[in-house]
Length: 348
Image (tube, rainbow, N blue to C red):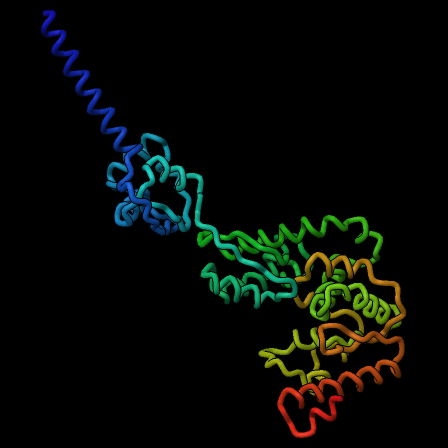
């Protein structure tokens, strides 16, 4: 009887040891000791079996069957999040499961510069391989989405805040848009009191800020440029801003012509009084500040000095003199650069 009991204990001990070994291998043994990186994309709606087979094929797990067994025991079978994962061949099944359940997907850092339009933002995201440009544009121009985000207007132009974002390939265009709008709201909330006392709506402030952003070459000039537009709005003078005209030109080729300044467009501030119907780009924080806090000047005009800065004028006479001066200097500079005869003398 005693020997039989000892035999049973021995058999159970061996069985338990085998089970423990199997579980250890299942949960804690990596396919390799060499850390080779593997990129695995988990599509939305994929079954766990499909996920496990994809991981086995990539060499991230030893066996799809054993990995599925481990996931079931841990209750992780239906908790895997879709996305692109960067895994290594020396990760244990436990580590892989942790990545999949917590959604530790590969991040792509995308910088949206100040002054970018919806179309430029979409192009940047497409270049990063995150979304098709036309899909993003269509969503950003969808009035229903704008309304669902609690914003005014028919498009999200101006509300996709310029910043550096960490996106992943599992995100939809709507998710990326929501992230940018959330950032916009957080920044704009800093100026809540100033907005209430400004007498301007959020949309008008962002529209003006977007124009200031596009007109600014030297950051220090933002308050001065803002003062020009504020002064013109108060006096009922047309803004006459080239960037607004350009925004309303389909397939703009980079060369603004006189015919463009006369064309019918709600964004043609040479033809229409007041602000255009909406923003023309995404303004940064400093441009928003400038729109709310213009410099105290009586300037009504400015012209480029061809070095990134502007010459500001109070009267049309002063402005015309500045225009003639800097246009003449620009022509001379072009002659010097091209090596035309006589250019050196004319530049002295």
